[in-house]
Structure formats: C-alpha cells, structure tokens
Image (tube, rainbow, N blue to C red; front, side, top):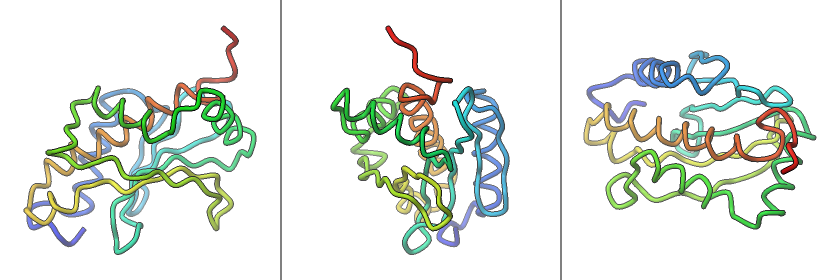
Amino acid sequence: MTASANISAAQFLRDLAADATARGAFESVQVDGNALRCKAKDAAADAWYTVAADGPNGAWMVRLATADRWLSESIETDLMHYGDPIEELVEEELVELGHDVARDGAMPAIKHFRSEEKLYTFENQIPIDALLARGEGAGAVTVASRFLHAYEAAFRQLGDMAGGDEDE
C-alpha cells in the first residue's frame, strides 16, 4: 500500500486485525505476511476470510476461500436455491454496517472461481484506493473492516458455513 502517506500496509493490517479480533466473529485472526487471515468460526470445514493487496495493480481484495469442495458447493447450492446474487447479500450486510455507497464506494462484482492454489474462492476488490490516495488510512481501515465483516455475515448464513445444514 504505497499510495497512502499516513499508513503503511503493515499498520493497515494490524489495525484491521485489532478490529476483527475485537468483534469476535472469527475463530482466529492473524496477520500473515502481507495479508490478514481470519478463520471462519463454526464452518463444516476450514475456510478463511482474507484481506490482501494482491489484486489487479495491487488492489486490496477481500475473499473467502476453502479447499473443501463440499463446503463451496453447499454455499453455491444455497445461492441457487434462494436466488439472491451474493453481491446483494453482501451489500445488505454492508448497509447494516453503515456503508454508504455514495461515500464509501459501490459494491464490486464478486468473482467465484477455483484458484491456482486449488482453493474455492469468492472475492472482490475493496473500494479504498481513493481513500488511500488522499491519505485517509483510518477511513480505509473502516471500509475494509466493513467488507470483511459483511463477507462473514453474508457467508455465515449460506451452506455449511455455520456448521452444517439446519433444516427449518
């Protein structure tokens, strides 16, 4: 994160990790090199929420990834069954967290793919470039935190992310 004069990438990740830890939504939170990794709590298989500057042109990305094909398929099945695009589910959670599209950036499209590391991945760019360019590191941490927690809240309701299927 070289665009910001007032916050380094390491400090950005430390601030984001402190926020994620304080909220208690994850089983574990750690800064791992140039990424924040948060282990999903109660998922049927290992799944990680990540924030890292490894997108196109060094863009900050938020993602959910798992090596477990069945966990990924359980999420996909719920998305098809309910018919709501994942972008809408995440955007609803963003709004609940105080995200203002006009001020904080629109919801980018979420990509779903199997990565080169053979991880089933959902990801999108976090719209913080303008904040970083203006030197607003604290604002960038706030927006990144909202995206991280919106991902957790939206995906927790899908498939086996909350420990398995619960028939209602």
